[in-house]
Image 1 (cartoon, rainbow, N blue to C red):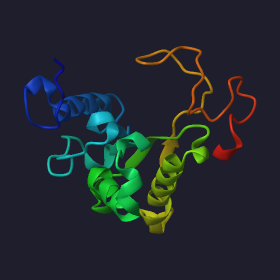
Image 2 (cartoon, rainbow, N blue to C red; image 1 turned 90 degrees about the horizontal axis):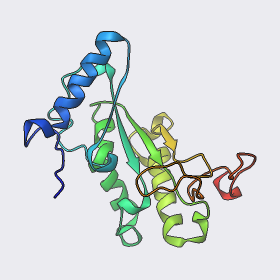
Image 3 (cartoon, rainbow, N blue to C red; image 1 turned 30 degrees about the vertical axis):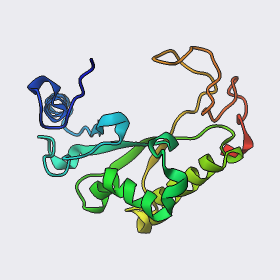
Image 4 (cartoon, rainbow, N blue to C red; image 1 turned 90 degrees about the vertical axis):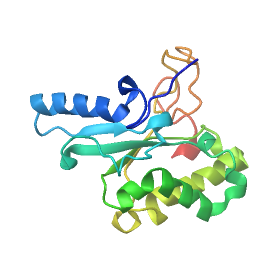
Length: 184
């Protein structure tokens, strides 16, 4: 079966903290002003122990990457706005709120026709509110984020078919217009 990396426990060769520390030090040796971006475990959602046992890197050179998608919240129709905020705070928002390190939500997105799906629309409203208005940086303009994905077609990869429609893509297949006006 598969084995999972952990932040700082388990077999030495599966300790993510050690790997990012080694890689970050090598990068900083070559480029002392570089910013080291570290994605959370479990598809960018698990930052357990990142604050208590930070990477062995200069604090001012570290930024964490989180991901936020509707499928991370299977109970989202029932969880309510407050519980959704608490879940994001527990996952990664606390790192920002407690001044541990900056966090970039490096993957965030929804299907082209998200507004046609009540559950997806509700998730988007909650996630957008957290990122901009009620989350850890609400008073400073919100948390920085990057949308996934811009392209209208899929690239190759696991569970991906090169050239197939990218249902989360913002632009159409030819990159000439929005795929759906609701994204804009």
